[in-house]
Length: 171
Image 1 (tube, rainbow, N blue to C red):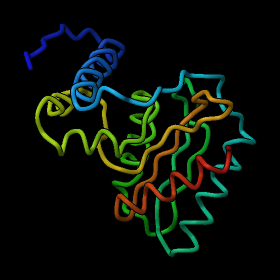
Image 2: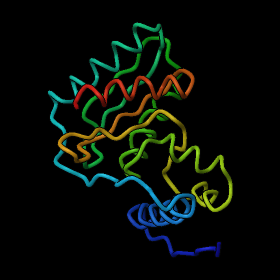
Image 3: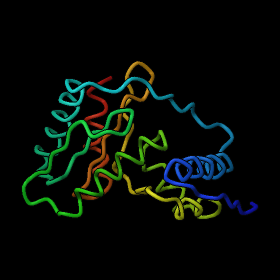
Image 4: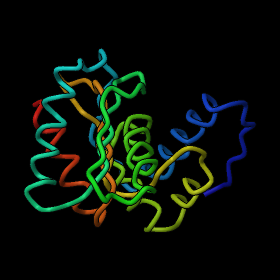
C-alpha cells in the first residue's frame, strides 16, 4: 500500500484524514464491509438517561467502577458519570472512546483490531484525537447515529459490555 500524506489544518481535516485512512485500511481488509449508518438528530436527554441507566445497571451489578460518557450526534456531552474509586485517567479515556466511536461511526473495538492486525491500519496510530481502545460504541436509533457512549475503568472487553448495554437500551 502506498503511503498517504495529507496536509493537516485543524481537527476537522484531521478527522477527515483519519476517516480516509480508516477507509483505506479497513477497505483493504474486506471488500464486504457492512453499511455504516449516517448521522441523525442528536439524542435527547431522556434517551441519554435511558442509556446511562442500562449501562450503570450492568456496571453496578458486576461491581465495575467505571466512567461513562454519552455524547450526542454533534459530539457534545449530554451525560457523564464516574463511579467512586474509578481511576482518574478513566475520565478522559471514556470521553475519548465515545468521541472516537462517534467520529469513526463504528465501535472502537473495530479500530483496535485494525491496528493490532498491522499492515496499512497502522496509519491510524498517527491520527489525532482517536482513542483506539475497546469500549466506545455509536448509539443508533431509527437507523441513524444519534450519539455515542464510551466506558473506561475495567478490562476493555468489560468496558465494551457496559457501553453496548447503554446503546442497546435505545433500540
